[in-house]
Image (cartoon, rainbow, N blue to C red; front, side, top):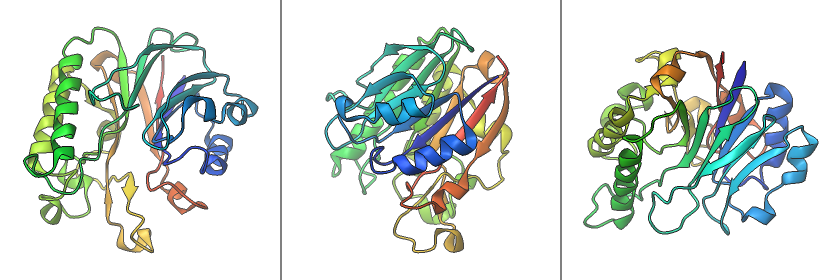
Length: 264
């Protein structure tokens, strides 16, 4: 068995106490973090080693973005794709070398895309769509059992948001984003592991805005975080868990962790 977690942590150094809590309670084999917001030498390697995580692939930059994969299983860094085409640290890929040997694990942080869903007046939105198109060209050539996880910043299904009609013109749920993400999915035949286990139209969110004083009462969530697998690998996924309680922890991220268990 191999358990893999994805979590947009929104500053790993600031939120290391809740990372430690999560590891102590859930103990995944591999933890994929997004928005670590630090350069590689600043990453809290010693804190992870103290928790039993000895293997790292960290792609960071000063103050923004950044991704890291930490593991109890030996791994080798496999790739760093610049799908943003501007040098931002938004991806790192690894190959598992112990249990799960041969699995490629891609950890990605897709741009949020700004506030206005119109690339003519909002360049960030255009960058997001272009990022996804570069990912799609890559996915068309994937030829190994691969799991891609992370903050996709898109909630594709009506049941992935608290109010479909109200969010149709809000970045993260617009038809053009959903269509662009679907092209990425079709390019490799990815299986949406979360929705294989938590079936549409069941409620399934992974992010709640900090602007809501009581996120549970309003429950204005969106499913922005995903775990997608190659078809053959998807058949080995035997469980998927969502940890909403982490949104209540002290100084939380606005995202929660998702974990998939594989029988490899």
